[in-house]
Length: 302
Ligand SMILES: Nc1nc2c(ncn2[C@@H]2O[C@H](COP(=O)(O)OP(=O)(O)OP(=O)(O)O)[C@@H](O)[C@H]2O)c(=O)[nH]1
Image (cartoon, rainbow, N blue to C red; front, side, top):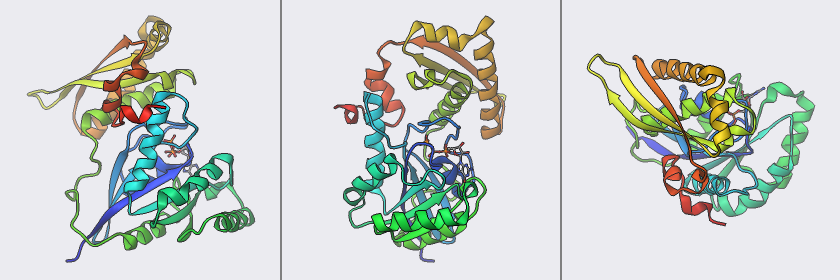
């Protein structure tokens, strides 16, 4: 059997639907989806199979104007992912059209894509009428020489199979990089931290989540088959600790319960989850926090 294998980089503005699309193609929840922007910090990869082809998705963080060190490291990781890939997919939102952010990506694209095919995937087609879609397709193809254009709804699944089939055909012959049953190469403890961070993001005030990070400090397999997981939530200010704790600790309790339930479903066994909050005023500038997120601290330098 001749096998194929390669990397596909998904690029696009925050909220374009990269995580949703990755999850749909991989068929499991490997990347964290929320309605808030900039949730994907790590270069999470999902591995999909299409016939004899293994497609490794590099689900990049959202591309946006970086100001802080953390933001700059995220953007460097995003473009780094695209440079390593065999094929690039630019994901845009049908109802938002050619935004400033899309224009900024288009300006960088020739440099990043260098010799690689770039497919355009217009997502969220469930939100617009056909004429809008056709006009957008023409507009985008006038601006860049896309190898192919796909109209999809990552959420509903429309067009996703076509895109996947096309991608598989574009990848080079070669041995598979991952065992057949492996869906993500992220260490489990990082996935577990992402799950808690997702619950925090969903429950807390809009501004707060970008100033916190979650790390899994300890993971203990117990004799009864359950796992004890200890995580630390790092916040930048003392005041944030109170917000996360909530009245009589109710907020953190609810977050812990939701995260534990999702972990149990993911791992298929019982989990004892212990959350601790630590105030680290400078965590945004600490190198260790970056490697935990799969980012390169130096990339954040201005
Ligand atoms: N209507 C509609 N909504 C969608 C579709 N695909 C994704 N969404 C929604 O768009 C939002 C953002 O999706 P994500 O997959 O988190 O986006 P992302 O590009 O990974 O975002 P970042 O991680 O912040 O870069 C979520 O609320 C999704 O449910 C779609 O096809 N149609």
